Every structure is written in structure tokens, then in C-alpha cells.
Length: 375
Picture 1 (cartoon, helix red, strand yellow):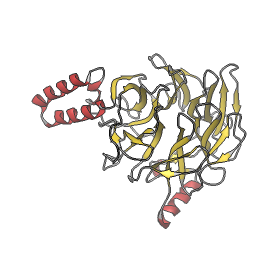
Picture 2 (tube, helix red, strand yellow):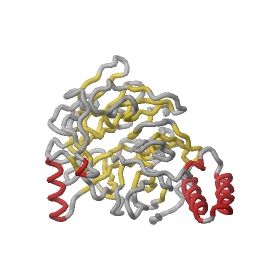
Picture 3 (cartoon, helix red, strand yellow):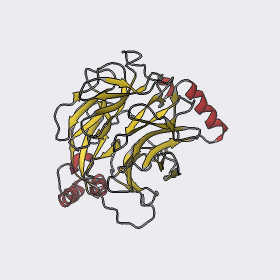
Picture 4 (cartoon, one colour):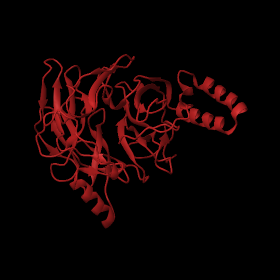
């Protein structure tokens, strides 16, 4: 779900490092000079400051995305295309900043890395086993599509030995991985049965279990912090025209979700329920460690469906609030294990087209509403 960079207006970053009271005073001073634009700044600052403070940038340059915390909360693992790389690889970085370190071997395309508990290693998907070259990007005439590269399989990298072991070995796409908090199971998206569905396996590659059974795409799944639930996004085509287009693209190894909604289910696939009904592109959901709160990315507030912000909701879909508000692309949120920090990717302050960097902030969001939806 990566998006090309957009022209930046350069004022989303004014909240960085300022207290909420100072941010508001700064915004009102701008309003005296610049009028309507500054009033917009005040509104955006106030909205974001309800949830986040002390926002700081960790990476500078490249396409950095799909981040996860280590279990001690001190490191992030992510996929990135950073010079001189020409294809996505796995990187790690300390939350205090510094130079990202490449962890994968530089071959093929990698995606969706996820730390195992402690210092055991990490899980990721890669095409390197089949071809060291980078797989081709989708044909430009198809527009915005998600490629389901058939050479993707799930791998486990052992931190102690440096070895890499292949966990899945089925024809077609196996990727979009996430690890349960205790490290016992891995959830991933696969087309092994002809349609992109969610499956889980034990961390040794055994115990395959199919979790979803509905025509369409399911992905970006994440476990809750107690391991009881899985939250994910899904697109299910409706009507003969949408279904025909979906199946035609799928035969070519692509999907083009027109709508993505957020779903929750038990970790064994039971009691599946849809929690958003917004008709938007909502994806990359993550649980807060404190309970049933979920943050995800969506273009819900943009009628042209080009701008993505982070949103907050409960597991039953009530009390939906926008977390980030601006003209930037904000996505792939993830909480630290203690729930005090939120990391996400954004093209705010990007210097080049398609540049997407990692940001981290202190989380101060408070669930105060008993029920209802607010946007």
C-alpha cells in the first residue's frame, strides 16, 4: 500500500518537540499574520496533539515502511529501499536514531519483517530463494495495484547462528507476516488455495491453519498483545463487474482493492467481525498493549482518497478518532510493548518523490468516550 510522494506544504512538522500549549500559541501567532492557512495549522496541530507528543524523525531518505518493535522496545525492524539498494530489504534501527543497519542478504525483494521475542531473530518474507534479482514492478498501465509475487515465501532468520530457514514452500504468494507475542505462531497472507487468505503456522513452519474463507483479499494482519485476537484489513468485491475485475487481476498476480475495511477475529479464525464500514482504504491496523484499542491508516477524511492519516478506534468499532491530521501520508503504525510510544511512517518533510521515513512519538491518547463514532 505504498503511495508516491506528494508536493509538500511544509507545515506539518511545526509540532515537533513543542509542548501542546506552546504549539497552540505558535499557531495563533501565525493566524494573525497568515490568516486562513494558519487557522488550518492550528486545527491540525490540536488534533494530532490529542494523541501524540515529542514526534521525532528516525530515518532520512529512501522508502522505509512496515515497521515493528523489538520485545524490549529499543529497536525497530522494517523493510526499506535505501540507496544503494534497488529493492526492498530488511533493516534495523535503534529508537534513539542512528544509521539503519541492513539485516537481510541484499538479494531479491523482502517484506514485512517481524522480531521474534527476545533476541531469537526475526521472521520475514522474501523472493531471494528463487532469484537474486529484484522482481519487476507492476506494469504502469495497471495503475495502483498490489503485486502478489509468486516467489514470496516466509523465512526465519536465527540471530544466534545467522542462518536463514524457509518456513513455507507452496506455489504462489506467501507474505505479509506477523508474529504472535509469545513467538509461537506466525500469521501471513497466502494464495495457496487460489485466493489471498490469512493462514497461520507455528514458528517452526508446522501446524498450518487457514483462518479466513471469503472471496477477496485479506492482509496486514497483527496479533493482539495477549495473542487472543487478530486484526487485519480486507477487500471483498461486490457485484459481477467488481468480481470479474478482481479475478482477472488475480490471475496476473495483482490485486486492486477498491475498499479496505478493518476486521477482528479470534486467533484461530473464529468469531470474525467487521469493525469499520467507511468505504475507504483502511489498512495496517495494530493493537495498543493496554487492551482493545486499535490504530490504523485510512484515507477516510480525504474525498479524493489521496491522503492517509492514522485513526484510533475500539475493537468493537466505536469511538473512532483521527490521530494524525495534515497533508502528509501517515501509515503503518505500531506501538512499543509498554504502550508509551507509537512509531509510524510518513512522507512529511520528504525531500524526494516517494520518500517515506520512520517517525516515533510519545503516545498520550486517552479513551474517554463511552460509545459512538466521531470523525
